[in-house]
Image 1 (cartoon, helix red, strand yellow):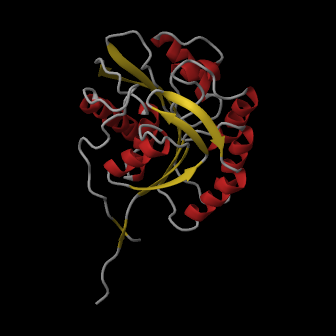
Image 2 (cartoon, helix red, strand yellow):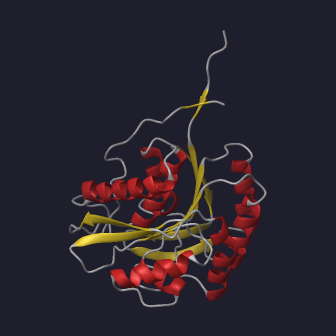
Image 3 (cartoon, rainbow, N blue to C red):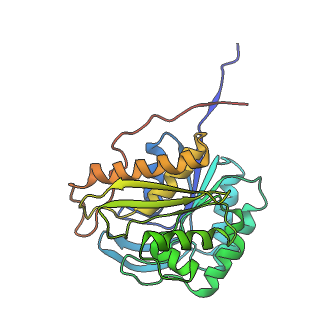
Length: 279
């Protein structure tokens, strides 16, 4: 009698490195694993960083990025993809051109454009490539307020600003936008989700004091991709991803890791790897 076989829901993260474990591919793998999915990864850049900041960034050859992608997509085809750090136009071309040779998969993109210090991390030609080539295959875009200001070409300081910016960004070509309001000076955290129909959904969470938010954006996009891989509809996955990140911050707020901004507690409620029936 043949034994019944299963497969794990898998999520591919295409992102940069963080040796301190709080952000980038390391944060993505933690979040994906904690939510019961199987994590695969493709490295796009090698930042040298810790909880106090980035010291330098070493590039990964574009050919190596392409080969990594092909190796994963030929073997462990993902149920969803999360993209993080794509910091050059050539890297955008490499990732998009490779993905287009494979069947369509749900894609969550966290546009890493601005450092915590406020410094802009990418050039105008990279932004043009992202909007022109990556946005059309993006199902959920997750900019923060600084990134939204760059994409919408307007100041974003209030919830009203977020409404205007979100509408402008969605019209640039991505299917939907989750605009994160973590920088708002308000007692509650507010984010806005602009779905593919143009409807706007507001999410609110209690604000509490902690320095341990390093990698929260990476974690959120990876969590949304994971919930999509688990079978949730996009709006439900967006809500569940935000709830997971909020609780991961809450459960790690009083833990000291490093001398700067510490990481989230990704494993506050780890789930066993889920099994899907083989079709």
